[in-house]
Length: 484
Image (cartoon, rainbow, N blue to C red; front, side):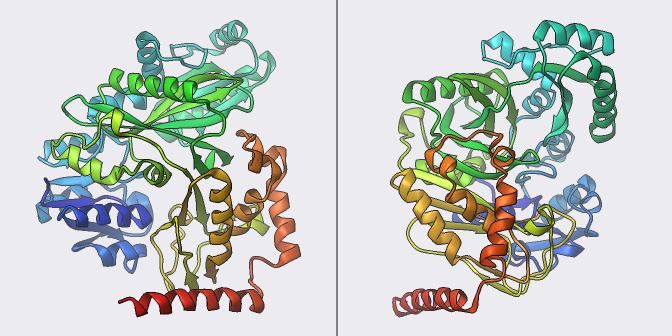
């Protein structure tokens, strides 16, 4: 097992990993930017080092500075969290060249899955169900037109090296192809340094279902079942749940086996996620995220598997603590991403100082947070404040518990998206579990959130409600203190 690990990330995920390290007796090193000097993860770490100014390009994406700190502190491993360096094969190679374990998948797997074209070829060869489309980069717009005619419109143009929803464009007919191809190619070159583009069939309004996989270096690889991630805005997930309402037991097992097959085909170990699109009883492998996902806590909630702990263990050379037969999901879990954004301004990021902060608690409630009262949220990074994770015996009770937790959650001084989550938790289509990736635009959910705020003044809690919540929390604190 490692003696010391550097966490090359920030915010709630850095705290999450440090907690796993603490339980395993591993010393932690935090690297931070000027903007994060007073952040919670910096306070939590055993050692901490400033690696540059606020912009990520000058700090959290500065490979050389991060490696330098790892060598200086004699850290044996680097955990990249998610985002930043998490799927950067060049950084992983730098770690190994300097005798540092990259706590993630092998470089070969990262490179294979980093190219959507190469990964699609490998998956097809292995017998994994993929989205219909081409398996070669498109040479010019005439070739693109020929391919699209064969696949059938509408189609999707995708950057082979793309990610995070960047470098994707739908094409409805032949007249749009030339301009769309030029646009996606230029965006791909600017964003990823690679203008390779391919074409896939556009699956209209699918459900987005992903499978958590994890494996060790000895060849043991399992899945921890699925997460439904269809509630998205601008390709960003906002609410996730498990299990998915769309799958029956037979499909659940079948897709799980496909996820394991995909991971084995890639020569994978450590934690990762296989993404699938699901429509009308059919599923298609989309891509593989070679890292821990934001929404991993809901999988932990229903399986009891501590994914961050397992990442650390297998990276150090130990075998998985679980076999596939050990994984028996129980109950239902929902994650709400609590973001600092302004619902009255097109949900734009709204970083500012938190002047009041009180988290919900009680049975089945978990908060993964990187903030505290008095902390100023920097403008340079993702707007996430925290993740609200809720577990209950079944979906109905899980939704009820989530609504209660959202009512308890207090955030002052920062505009946030808690009203969005309240609207969704009461929306009939969501309650029936009949939604897909078109849920937010189809039902004009964002407009309904604005209406909700204006009608209830939910964004600035009324004195009466604030007093009621404060009273509840005071009782919780008093009860807790009396038991110490």
